Amino acid sequence: MRREKLAKLQAEGRDPFAIVKFDQSHHSVALKADFELREKAAVVDGVAPASGTVRIEDVAVAGRIMSFRDGGKASFLDLQDRDGRIQLYINIDDLGADEYARVKALDRGDIVGVSGFAFRTRRGEVSVHAKQVTLLAKSLEPLPEKYHGLKDTEIRYRRRYLDLVMNPEVMDTFKKRTRIVSAIREYLDGREYIEVETPVLATIASGAAARPFVTKSNALDLQLYLRIATELYLKRCIVGGMERVYDMGKNFRNEGIDIRHNPEFTMIELYQAYTDYNGMMELCEGLVSHAAIKATGGTKVDYQGTELEFAAPWRRLTMIDAVRTYGGPDFTSVKTDEEARKLATELGLTEELKKMLQDCTKGDILNAAFEKYAEKNLIQPTFVMDYPTDISPLTKQKPGDPTMTERFEGFVYGREICNAYSELNDPIVQLERFQQQEREKALGDDEAYALDEDFVSSLEVGMPPTGGMGIGIDRIVMFLTNAYSIRDVILFPTMKPDAPKASGSRESEDSKRAQPDLG
RNA sequence: GGGCCGCUAGCUCAGUUGGCAGAGCAGCAGACUCUUAAUCUGCGGGUCGCAGGUUCGAUGCCUGCGCGGCUCACCA
Image (cartoon, rainbow, N blue to C red; front, side, top):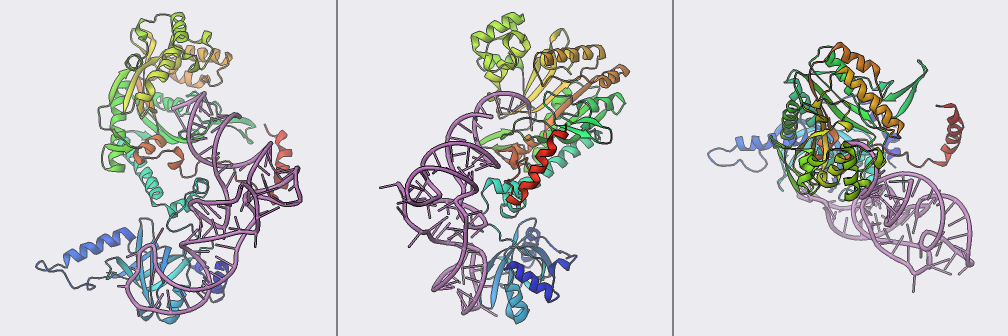
């Protein structure tokens, strides 16, 4: 039906797809706001002008037709653009019988450009009285239901364009996302940070504990990895003298997918020479609260029914204190790995441990106790400071206590949002830490940090004392947009392909046969 | 990967203790020159996710598979 209409239009020389441009004078929401200002200005001596006399002449709006209220010789349509909706009014007297019929033959979902004047209807709706309506694109597929909208999560994620058309709160979330990203850049640029782009394709995937995606360069005949972190490259920039650098972009981790994890996600890592993890805490508070203000207008936000306050200063406590505060044991009295293992058994912590108990150090067990007792209780923004050295291979030790490092993670609503340290800049110690990671790998930890020899070489050239931090952008966006799932803040989340049609089966047979040649 | 739930018209959802498949919106035809979930009259619309099985008969029961959601594990 719609295809027939299109074919007819094309046969008549009215092909909408041949039109190349349309100049908008206004967007919907701004036009309505302008109109109300015009009305206020028209009030003379406290007397409002007669109904219907205020107009804004020569307006041009464009967008998608979302609904028809079809009257006999006068009709109303709702037009939706980027910012919202505005009502259109058409009547047969202004358009002429032929043109009026053509407009009535348009379909819901069609994209039109409209010129006319803005006015307020008798029922009080600011509208555009159309003098000309031009079809700019034909919609061949019917839109979802106008009242209930599009709810099916699978269609919403696979066909996000429909979700954006039908669900204004989804559009709003992604507009906020871009404001947050801009606010972060603005904040760092104002502090003389340099934005750089480090490799996405890397010969070594290191800088974090995660399994990488593997790919291959044909030109180099080389196995490559998609980056799991930008850390080691950004530190090379610090060695080179850039002093303050950041890279905001996608990281890729070949792990499970759930409400908080997408295989590709956006992370900012930033490094600042001549400061330490205390400097990073201040930067984190300032940066996140700045983003909150830019996205939501304030530092208090509602997240799933809980009010979160992002204004500085955030609560600070050490990992040991966090465990003790939330009902766990006091690790200050635990001196050896052996004592810690005994404690872990008594507390039933073995579930939380990632390795066999006999391979665990005091640090592993403290971390497990933190996850068990404290993590879920950290609702308001909190910095948990001083992580065990064993689980922090890129971090500088605390002065006077080689078992602990100057590292913190920020928690909100029981979830980690950032990870920061005073960066380890001693090349000899760094090499030892990598060698320890290699031993962990041999014990079966396939997420142990990979050795990057060139990175160690860069430290040998000399890196100043430096504070560094990584912040999960998607998670920040989740908190600032009240999103329950990470998929609600990623436009096109990773999905399995939809079930192939029967015609595609031969192709998939072919690709199956090709599989053994890969890798 | 495990567990639970879902998949019915373009969309939102009913439904069948196993017996011709339903509504609303959307669509089509008509009425209406201020409607806004417009209203009124009439009409069309289905591989009940896919494949097997049981049965006289399966959308419904059984098995397998696919996709999605939630959840546990892993991770940020």
